[in-house]
Amino acid sequence: MEKLMIKNMLNKVGFVRIALMASVGIPFILASNAFAQNPPPPPPPGAAPAPAAEVERVIVTGSNIPTAEEVGPNPVFSLNRDLINKSGAGTTTEQLLQRLPVVNGTNIPVNNNGTSQSGPSGTAALGLRGLDPGATLVLVDGRRVAPFPGAALSGYGFVDLTTIPITAVQSIEILKDGASTTYGSDAVAGVVNF
Image (cartoon, rainbow, N blue to C red):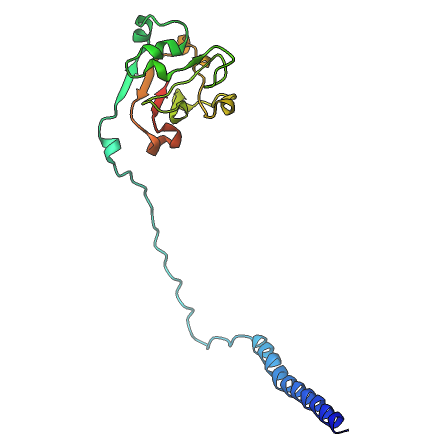
């Protein structure tokens, strides 16, 4: 019986604690809502409205700070249409580029057989400075050329030079130095513009 009385007493004490916390906490919750419902006091009569803040106009102008790459001479090799005609190259662009001293003939692999491991058959890729053809950016009239669709088979993306006819080329500019800061990571070896 004594245990039952202690248990009953603890239940009453627990209920009293909860009731006490609720009776103290509920007025604070309701009072905070009452403060939010009071309108702001009206301004005193005769007081002038506060002047509007003046906002200054700010003009931001971008500037180009020349770097050593932009100021110094770039190693650009150029060929115009007259030099292309006098070169005696065949009808394909890769035949002309293989004869240039800027580009090693070994850097333009022409794959004519279907068993080649270096790329699809009948394609020609250009690689400057002994790097993979994927590290040389090829442009036509200053715009990027889409990579060859079979590039996934060869392991690197490249532009097929057989798709650029030599008769359509008016000039060739070859930037023999890395231009990744200007053109991105696909121009590490250099840039060729047709």
